[in-house]
Length: 527
Image (cartoon, rainbow, N blue to C red; front, side, top):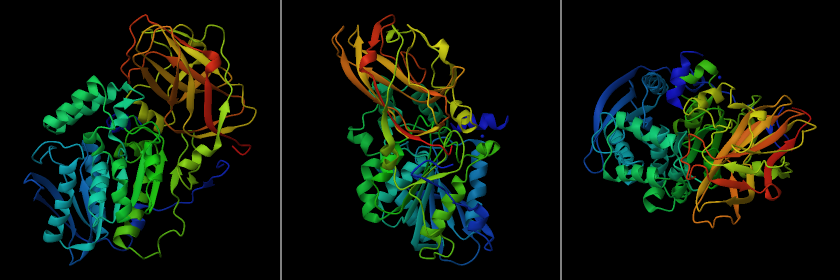
């Protein structure tokens, strides 16, 4: 997470079969080379759709226009270090010829009103900011883009689906489905909800609707079928984005608990206009915040600027644009070159069943007892992942009744995991409701186990003692498994990221013979 990244900043982050190494290059200086203009900066106020006053800062080239326009809705949380970086970036954009109008969304910081969570009011506000900029700056009516990170990214996407004037969007670490970070396989999120709610109150004000949403997130989790939730999910607005042929550039992170890895990829595959998604190690926004530079920040921001140059600033000018723009670009969590893919779905084409074995009694659990399997200390685990330090445990410590463990055989050759693993099996509970958490590990020869991905599963209304089938689709990951390593699957009943529905001391059995693990896995002799 960006908060943890700021803390860590004071301390110090061969392509698989069917993929090619990415040759993408480009820096921020490339975007504005030879066009370093003087910039005028001023604060102003924009009247939102219902009269709400929006605090804006305008960065404008000090020469006559018209100039391409970038509308920038602000984030949910604004850290001082990141704010300084953003101001520097907006100035650089203005020096290279853009009018940039960065504003606080309603309910946040200097703007009036109450937070809308990227709903209709936020969408209408973004269009009003476009109207205002066209009337009060030298902005070009035909060259308009939107840029946002996290919360601002979602506002930008939802606005572009409704406003055809917005030709391109850069969405950095924005969710595609609002419910994804609050409810996972019927399980309520714990630390993520608390983090979002409390830090949002530092900078913002909640109205009755958002208060109810957080109350619901705590009591039962958000449901994507709820119209109020869907309205705030870009995945519900693909028709508008496709109708407008909006050029969409997205960035995500493998260990993002707010935007589970794979959610944005599924959204990307539904878009029919120009599109690209770049996935990097780290937690929420760690690939493009200021502090990630300590660990070797990827070129997310630079690539985003090249996207805007081509689709907003200089549309139709292909002299500085690549003839090939990949749809999906990913950085494996184990390092190595960037990889390109034609779609998100193509990652799953390598899916195959991985046989598992278990020792006698390994399928039995007693609820409420912590195990040595953990998702990592939220929110610090994201920056650690970006630095190449995923959660690690010792496999011999994972024993019954705190953990149910299953392992594959040793891989004779290196293997590359890209995409979602799927776990299916039979669960026999002694109570009507409960929670188990599935963890997938890479186990080394000495028993060191590195976490690949994890997800919970919660059941309700089951008959005690009677088995039922369950399916858990784990968040996507990109990991290279060395020769001689095994894949390990662990179930336990506690993880600080999720709310457990287990009565303490309740017994659960994962039926070993029923388990089926399907993994998108490619053997590679070139790794």
